[in-house]
Image 1: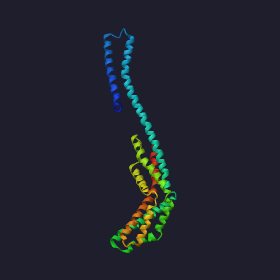
Image 2: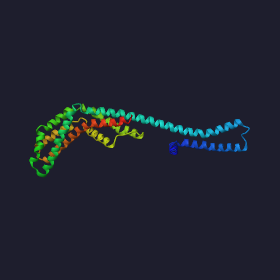
Image 3: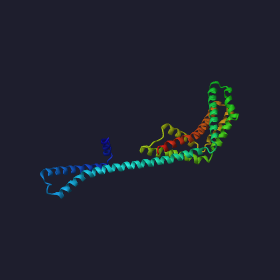
Image 4: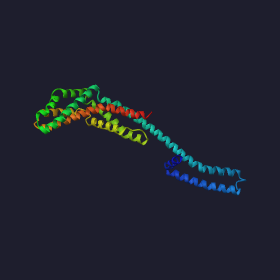
Length: 283
């Protein structure tokens, strides 16, 4: 273990310091040889002062290089520890800011958001099934369930719950920007510093989930673009002669709305998990 530590210390020593070490030890070896020869020849017996100076100089030539390397290594270790603590503090601050910002994406009731997610998924699945049946049968009866959900109040309730929970529009933009900025900084700068200093980063599935949800939210910072497109898709579904195209357009907008509601809902839990991971590693 000691040999491995010394090898690592030598590899991390700057080239200039290595040359100085070798030069001083080379001179020290020469002086050591001269001292040994002087002992054998009795040269030092009548010269106590010179003997002390010579022996001290020889010891210095061996001791100073070793001290320089050890102190340099200790200083490097201390600097790395300070950097690791700084990186961890930064990670804790940023992830806590992210976790506190995510719930503000839905300033309205969380129950309304969850209801909207479930209702949008129900209509989206019905649209998907209607596409499959219509393409194979061209039978109006295959659209009955979807028409009931679209015209019977289920979709209207889903959209009302979505608007109540998320309140899309201009006020959503700064919150989306804040969440996006916190995650971008955490996933690039902070992640790099943590990994460089031996810190703990998020598990890949968790990081990938958060990134996917943030991308969905960031794609429509007002969170209402799909609502306008959905309104056009519904009118087209009721009036278009080309029902295959109309169905696919309607299904696409329903899928976008469901995924957006799901992203906003999950981001609160996912960022809270991330906060627990990164803050627990600092204790």
